[in-house]
Structure formats: structure tokens, C-alpha cells
Image (cartoon, rainbow, N blue to C red; front, side, top):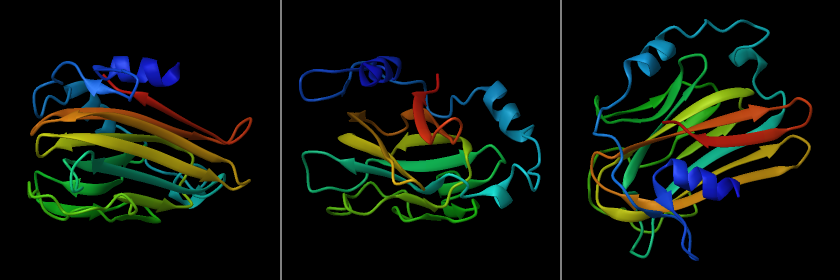
Length: 196
């Protein structure tokens, strides 16, 4: 049921094989001023709640996007922001890789090329070792037209594995956003929801 709701909120519908695109997303660069201001106004990290507290409940967080039904590659680039205004991913405006979250690394394509990179489903685009609990915002920006799959996975320190997957269609300039929340109270939990 959660997958159905998520797909519907992202403008996707679910046939028997998974989500498919039904309507175009917001125009490229349609980031709301409120969202931009919220990122700028985020409180500075403190030793009790910021990056120093990383790894209190999760061993890792990985995010992977791949092109479906073709030779592989990535039809979109990813950028992940945490609640402390730190980022990891590919900055398409600056054409550079950003690795600003402690314990994180970007392993995806390093250019905004539209050429397929070959089969890469076994390598995550973003990996964070011992991520801090809290909220992460994932921005998915299309660079070519293709069907895609996206997986968000985390492993709790107690060994609990969490996974979220969607499928859909991507076009150049399309922007989609997901919010990923890692919680440890009352138990380790990963919640992924679309952001409108």
C-alpha cells in the first residue's frame, strides 16, 4: 500500500510490473523558495545532534538509480542533503562532485553526459557509512529519456535491513524529490516519502 501511495504522489501509476510515469514533473529548477530557505535556515549541528552523533543506529545508507530494459547507465543524477545543510552527489549546476556529508561518498557518474555508462546496478551512486539519524532530502534530476529503477536501502546496527524501490520514466530536466528519514526511537526505522 505504501508503494502505491508513494507512486501516486510522485505522479506514477503501478501496473502489475511496477510504477510507470503518467504525467510530467514540475519544470526544471522549480525548487520552491520555501524549500531553499528551509535548507539555508537549518540549525548548525551540535555535538549531541549533529554529524558527531553519526552512526547511533544505522550501519549504512545506500542509494542507487539505474536505467531499465537497456544496457544500463544512469538516466538521472542524484544529490542528497541532510538536515545540517551538508550534501553528497553530483551538482549539475557546478558540474562537480560534492562529498560534504561525513562518512559519505558519491560513486555515480562524474559528468552530466547523456551517454549510457554500461551495467552498473551493483554499485550504489551514494553510500554513507554510519549515517546520522534524521532527515535526508534526495533530489533526482533527469539527464536523458529512459525508464529507471531507484533503490534506497539501509542497514540498522541490529541487522535489520530496510529497502525502498520505485520504477518510472525519466526525461531531461525532470526533477523528483524524496525524503528519507532514519529513526532509532522506538526501534530502527527508515521512512521514505515523496516531497511535493
